[in-house]
Structures are given as C-alpha cells and as structure tokens.
Length: 393
Image (cartoon, rainbow, N blue to C red; front, side, top):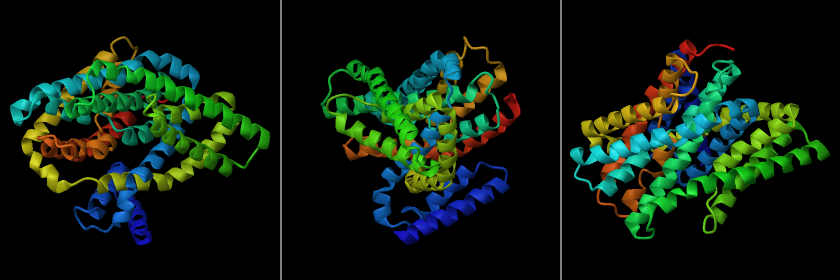
C-alpha cells in the first residue's frame, strides 16, 4: 500500500504541474493520473487502498469544506442565502426531471430506472467547485456580490438534495419506502440537524482553543478530527434522524470565523497546507474509480443525455438567479460552475447495478461518462470565465 501511495503522490504532483503548464486546471491532470493508476488501466493501486478510498476521499472533502466554512462570512451568507437555497435544489430538479423524461427514448429503461440515472447525474461536484471558489475568494474575484460564497453553499446543498432523492428512488425500487415526498422531508431535517451539530462542535472548539490555546497545527488537526467524528455521527444517527454531516462540517468553520477571526485564519492556513496532500488523494482516487471501458458502452446516446441534462440544469441556474443583481456574465459564470460532476457519480454510480436494477449497467456507464465529459470541461470553463468575467473587489 505504501508503494501505491508513492505512485499517487508522485504522479499526482507531476500531472498537476504538467496541466498547469498547459494552462489547464491541475485537478484534471490528477483525475487522469488516477484513471491510469486505477484498476481499469495499469492497476498500480493496491486493492487494500482502493477498499478504503471512499474514507480517504471523505477526509479530503472534509478538509476543503472546512476551508470553505472558514472563508464564509455572515454578511455575505445573509446576502446570498435565499439564492443559495434555490440553487441548492432547482437546477437538480430541472436536470433530474428532464433526464428522467428523455432517457427512455435513448435506452430501453423504465421511468423509475431513468429517474435513478437522472438524480445520479444531477449532483454537481463540490470536490471540483469548492477549491475553485476558495481560489476566487483569495483573489477577491466576485466577492463584492458574494458569488463564490453563493456557489460554495449551494453546491453542498445540491449534493444533499440529489442524494436524498436518489436514496428515496432506490427505496422505492427495493420496496422499502412508500412515499418519495416523505423522503424529501428528510432534506430540511438533515440540513437543520447537520448545521445544529456543526454549530455545537464549532462553539465547543472555540471554547477549547481559548481555554487551552494549542498551537495552530494542533488546532487544525483537532478541527479535522472533530469533523470526521461528525461524519461518523451521521451514520450512527441514520436509523433515528437524517443528518447532513457535510453541512455541519462547513458550519464548524463558519462558527470559528464568527467567534474569532485570528483563530479561523490560523486554522485555515494550516488546512491550506494539508490540502496540498489531500487534493492529490481526492482527485487521484476519484479518477481511480472511473472505469473507462464501461464509459464507452454509453456511446453517443450517453453524451446526448448528459448534454440535454446540462441544458436543463443551466436553465435551472438561470431561473434561480433571476431576482439577483448579477449581470449576464456573472450568471454565465454560475452556470458553468454547475457543470462539473465527479464525487457523487463515482460514489453511487454503481449502486443501481449492485441492487439488481435492470438498466444498472447503462446507468453506471452514463455516470462514468458524465465524469470524463463534464469534470474537465467544467473545470476549464469555470477557471477561464471566472478570471475574465468576475470583477476584482
């Protein structure tokens, strides 16, 4: 396993450097490095490491979401809050519904199977979006109107919505759940529960840091450890109450920033250094999950479904932004920032196949194709348009 980690680190760093030299986002290079290292190409990653890859990816995602929370100020969040809620579900509804309706014209799939595909594809990737938004915040790009903060908050909510709808549809398929609308009630409950637990953890950490004053490095490690425990608590409480742990993770950072900016900045700096390693682990292991041989099975029909879904998602984003003061180019930036897909599709793309859904192979193929197609294009468009269209504050 240690040799596999060496390959991940070295090839991840090299691909990041190479793609940046080509004026492309480094994460694209890391994704392709993961594909090459993964079990479907050269198979250089130890199977033991692949088994724990979901946990490692979760830890890396926790690091970047903590940084997002530590960069989110209350006044900015208040300004974009209503829009963030709209963007947290409306684009996913548009995309998921349209894919559900059009998929039967391309593949022999039932409406339920098409809906499963629709809400796998409908989730945007916070792993791609959040690092880019943090970079724009650091560069003061679009911060006057809170555009990066809006996308930080809404992309996480978008994930929660898509996953809850998907889990409800899987329950319907397995005969475990009766009413999808009751399942949707879990979304506000899970968000409130997650934010409440995250706020409690944030206040507790602030008290510990003020009382015992550990060094900044230890502060960063304590915050990560607490956030990881929050994700464990989500699984523990699942039979009793739904909890959105990732919303709680962002809330921890937000509370620390509210209570003490000096503490928040020191922790954020340490997390920034940890992110150098965590970013490699996240994107290389996401790439390693991608079966490029399966992606080819989706063919042009799969690409057509993805493009139609993205068109519907773009309309959903635009509708969400109608009542904002964003100019057209800023709205365009928000639209392209909602293109990338990776994390959720890699995590749950194979679930329908594993539970015996007849069209499970097609669903997995389209999910994999959506990563290969949208992650590079979305990341490049987001960076290029953001640099050109967002005003520096």
